[in-house]
Image (cartoon, rainbow, N blue to C red; front, side, top):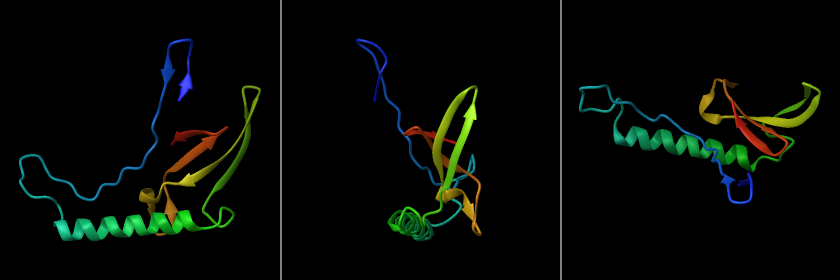
Amino acid sequence: MEKLNAGDYSTSMVGVRFKLAHRRAGKDKWSITDPVKRKNLVKILKDMIAETEKEPEKALTVLLEFEYKGKEYKGMGVPVISSCERGVCQQLDIMLSNTSIPV
């Protein structure tokens, strides 16, 4: 929570979303069955737990340090597990100055 002025505050939430299945417009069926959705969700959660349990220096992070418009920034980027395929992650959750910026 960030205090904006005497009576106003700003809050934000950062989270992860996973697409387990889809349903086409006008169709009654999902793209995969409930047992397969459950199996995929369990795999995603196990992968997240394994990544979280790693020591910070062993985790997949990208250290950032740069200057922009005369201001120095330091932080890190953590891969969004749901965007990773065959060891390549397409999205990072960026933390700069203790503020999360999803990219």
